[in-house]
Image 1: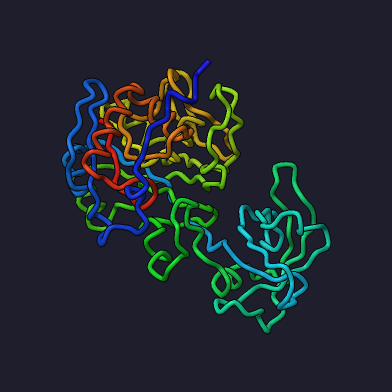
Image 2: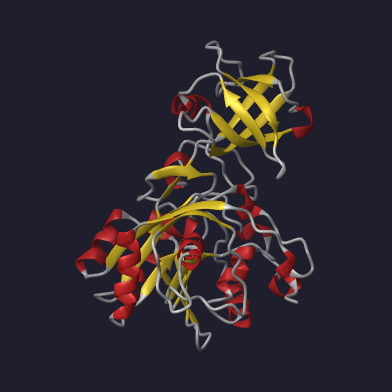
Length: 354
C-alpha cells in the first residue's frame, strides 16, 4: 500500500501564483540534485548551464483550447446559466464534443443552450449547443449548431484557468497560458513547465548543440483530480490522448545511446515517454490514449532530468516527481521553496531535477 498521506504538505495560500511572472523567463528555478537532495535556487535562464552539447530537450507541444464558454438554456435570458468546458472533439468536423457542464443536473438530453457573448448577453447569430447525453465519467456529449467550432472558441471561448486561480481569465492569459511552442490544439490545461521558455532561451540551447523535439499529450481535466483514496494505488487515472513521432523517439534513443541526457519538460512529457518505453529503455513511436500512473518506487526509464512546476499536495503529479527522486528529498525541497517564498502551481516557479 502506498499511503496518499505521504504526499501531503501544508502550503500557505498566498504562495499560489494568481498571475504569471512579468516575463516568461522571470521565474525562479529550484535545482534539486536527485542523489544528494541538495538544492539551490537560480533564475530560470540558468537552465542553459545544465545542458551540454548532445543532450536533448523534449517538450509537449499541445495547445490549450479556448474551451470555457457560458450559455443560457433555450437561449432564454432568464434560462438556467450553463458553464461549458470542452474536453475532446468526437468527429472530424469538430461539431460533436465531450464536455463538462455545470450544473449537470439541468443538462438533460435534448436541452439546448444559446452561447453568451463576453458581455453576458445571448448571441444574436443563433450559436448554440444541444445536449446529446451523459457519459459514464460524468462528462456530456454535446453538439454545436455549426461545424465552425474554431470561430465559436474565438468569439465565446475563455482560457480555462485552473480552479486554484481565483480570478477570471484576462487578455494576457490568451498568450501566457500557452507555451511559445504550442501547436496542436486539444488541451484543457497547459503543460505548465514549458511556460517559462522563451524563443531566446530555446535558440541559445540549440546554438549550444542541444537537441530538441516534441511529443503531444492533450492534457485533460483529470490532471486536477486529487487522489481521494487512502491507498494511492487504488486511484483511477484519467485518459489522455498522446502522439510520439518516430523522429522524437529516435532523438531520445540516440541521445541516451551516446551517453548524453534527456531532459523532459513537464510531467506530461514524462507520461508520453513512459507510455512508449520498453523495459530496456527504448522508446517507440506511438499514438493512443494513456492512463499511466507513475508513483514510487516505479523507476522512470526514458528520462535523465525533469523540469516541472510545484504540484498540489496528494496529487498524482507529485507522486510522479517522486519517481525521479526520493519522496523525502522532494518534500524537503518543497519546504525550502515555501520558506523562500517561491510561487506555486501553474503560473508559479519551477524545479529542475538533475
